[in-house]
Length: 334
Image (cartoon, rainbow, N blue to C red):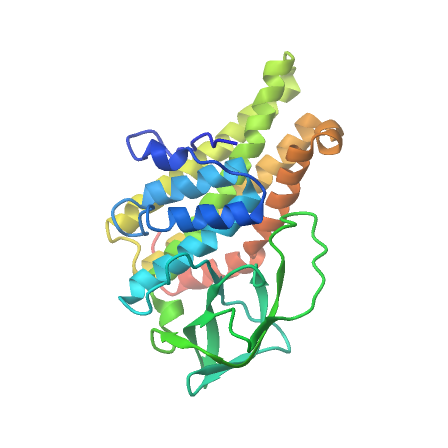
């Protein structure tokens, strides 16, 4: 299907050619779209961050599974561009970012290779390359890895999720896998783009919520809404209006140099919190307004609900509020 553009705010911020894309739930097609978009979308902080986030939101509104494939590929390219001219992504390569940590597993880096198991690696069996964090002493360093090397392999594991069923996350085991350093130890987490990438994910959540809200609006066109339906429609609009404006303002802050260092970390926590709360409200209100019928009888709607429910758990809820509170005590102003 052809995407319907999602704007974060009124104004001439978007390029319609990048907001009208052919999107479907086929993962291979989504990977092809990712490689097509890679050289065409702007990088965060380049002066057109709003356009980048509108592309991500538009994909999220059309199909969250496709967006879940495209977003980490674009994020990896942005990380490599922020680092500098090397390593250069091979033509046609598809990328993920594997930076999660988990109990009982750890990736160690030494002598130009990785050893150990990295958890929560999405599409590890489908991608050609990834940026992977490995421990160097007590600091984490980022490395570019060719996932097709025989010493790298997806670890066995069940993927029981109903949401994002084609974007399976597993562990990846590295057994002396060659790895190219990207930045020095600690660079990946302290760079400005770490916060910008986190807000890009929030733009996808926003798009997913817009997709659900469009179904609610369609219901009002199909039959005259009663006062309860109007209440939910109005409340959903308020939530999305606020979240969209917050994303638009944050994109302007990124481009204006106001989202660097500690200011960027605070902004990212605020933006992600606002958007996550708005998306959760949209999920709840659309469910209340539409009832069980669409969930039971409309495959697209049921998939949207399941996809967004799972995707939102990339926000760490109360733990992210704790992190924001700690940043505020360290000196962030109101």
